[in-house]
Image (cartoon, rainbow over the protein chains, first blue to last red):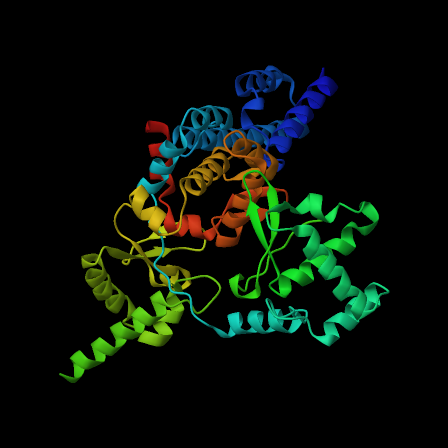
Length: 236
Length: 183
């Protein structure tokens, strides 16, 4: 009887320790049942078991205190079941949620200013920025630009001029679909024709119209004075 | 007359400290106010508060653990607490929009804060994302969450999300939950 009773006391102590140390729900301990078990062996107790019994009783008292704390928390307004909250949130419109939030919301009045911290961040951002330059929009490409092109594509400047003339001739007087136009000579020359067309645009000899809703782009022949100076990115 | 001028300059200094951000986080700690305004800083703050209230603003004191403190609180508590100037009255949806908020952003923040509170103050980030995804597209969920974290409304705690310093400073959490449940 004694060994079984000791084993039972140890189990009660272990269970209470788990609840106390591992932050487990304190209601997993059945207080009434455990007290009944502890009381059962009272008549046959020696001194050692009595001490163990007292230790188990103390642990149970601690668990009761945790249960009381938990009940208090649940009873307060701030305790909400996650599932119930989710259901509640799903039932609210965005406007309803926003209005509930704004009723309890008092934003801080603050003024951003340049502090040493911000200056340090700005400086390191500037230092880490890559060097960047754009060719002058709307102006005739300079010799240097053409040299760069010659490095990419093996051709003479005169050939490029001839190619630009050719494309202008193909363009005619109306609007031409951009993708049809650059793809006319097949996939091999598509990138090259797009590049030559971009030079025509830079010289103001070709214009571009975009319809973002239909995702369509047209190009047309124009004269330099009609073209505004802005850059357009077109995919190939 | 000299006393008056002294008070005026201290109030002006308090305004500078409270309104102009000198750290990453706005507001100013009690000990900083004491250092700049002297031992009677609470009286100066009280005086400034009465003037600010006429303008629809108020001074809010929040302790390190997110509790709102009153000006009559113990000196030791006030010195480590942060003092902020906040709006005194409720904001309308239109006014919030003019301050750069969109309805989606506010509603999203309401969902995030409610979810965290319902998880006893610390909710798994995945669960918060899932809750948001029921009302908003995925790309907006990620964008908004990173915005809330950056502004200090929410903070990351491992794989969980907890309420950030700004939520404690700007939101009456108890009232908010009451409104959410009673809308």
